[in-house]
Length: 101
Image (spheres, rainbow, N blue to C red):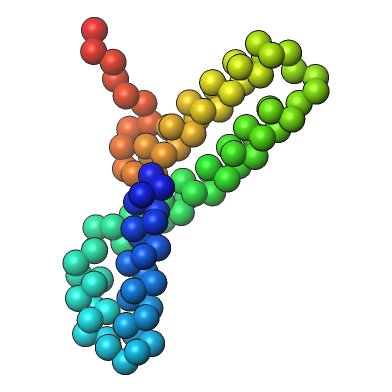
C-alpha cells in the first residue's frame, strides 16, 4: 500500500513538474504510462485516510492506562487486522485473504 502511494505521489509530482516546465507532451506521456495507477488515486487516498485514523487508534491503545495488557493485545490485533484490510481494499484487493483448507 505505502509503495503504491509513494509511486502515485512521485508520478503526480513529475507530471506537475513537466507541466510547469512547459513540457506538456512529457506530462501526457507519463499520464498514459501510469494510467492504471492514476485511476486508483481515489482508492489509495481513501486508504491513506483510513490508515491515519487507525494509526491514531493504535497510539491510543498503547497510551491507555485503563486497558489491561491482554486487552491491549486484543485491541492491537483487531486494529492491525483492520489496517491490513484497509490496505488491501486501497490496492483493489478483497479485504481478507482466503486461507486454504
